[in-house]
Length: 236
View 1 (cartoon, rainbow, N blue to C red):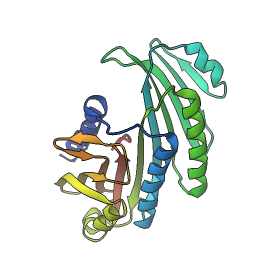
View 2 (view 1 turned 90 degrees about the vertical axis):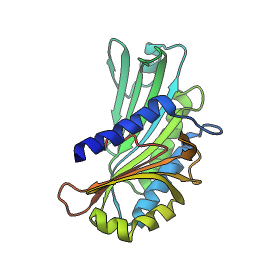
View 3 (view 1 turned 30 degrees about the horizontal axis):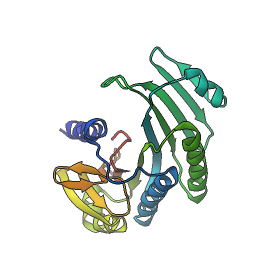
View 4 (view 1 turned 180 degrees about the vertical axis):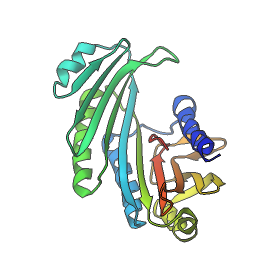
């Protein structure tokens, strides 16, 4: 039962990502999206949470692809050429970068995606991530790509205790208003809206731009969480 609910949350996020993602206003800059990630991290720290994984994901459709261009433009990356894809990776030790160029199977339109991810997060990491992402965005994308921020981590208290004592404060630090939620034994998922984050998607007749998943940790001594804006992109 627990596994099925996790799958439902993942599939809901992927469905929204692939089919019903509707943004209001202009798409955001890389700097703004790093600020989204920093806002999420700040709220997690205020709630005494531990960050174990973070990611920034960007994606843009393109009309023409020149595979050799990317290999020559980013020689520092290790490239893997597939039949319908090109993937470049770089691991600095502090964070990892991945560039993917491939066709969208639904409409046969090529797209470029970029992911910046890491495990530890502090002020220095945030500054490095901001500089790296800004540089890549300027050289990799022609316009303003669709952007996502996501963090995975742990809170010390078990889910029932965290929900009763800390969840409201955590949501308030994000200025988030709950739109809908699913609650099961040792599991909770929340979709919410916050004015702190500009990108939104339509959920029934309301807008949302935060997804939060909570469950008891594997050792049953704390709460594992994943939070993302506007949706989750880290598997949960």
